[in-house]
Length: 119
Image (cartoon, rainbow, N blue to C red; front, side, top):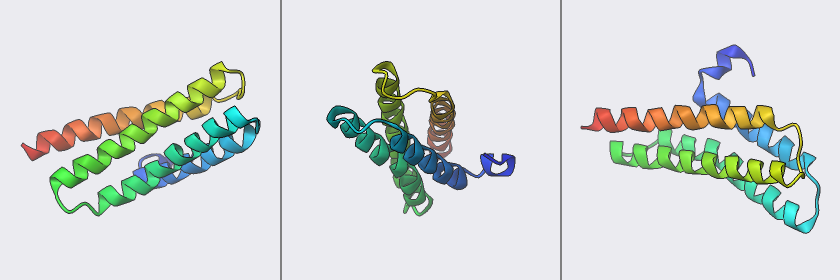
């Protein structure tokens, strides 16, 4: 990821969605793994879409709610990746896990900051 894009959350989440799409394409297509791959595709790509919704939030409360949705989807994506890794159905996913963990940390802090600014 280009360093200038690292600080633009919208671009970073779009890049993350692309990474998740590519990871999903790399996994086997057995029925169980396909199910998890589809779930990962939904949760991993929805982070960018939900962040777009947050940018258009109608109130502070709505903004925080939408950021929490992004965080929820990131955590779900992380669990999907870990299940796929531990089951041996995907290898070489450390980069994806690292980016997921970094985004989780960013959104955890962003929610905390937004809550503090609200009060």
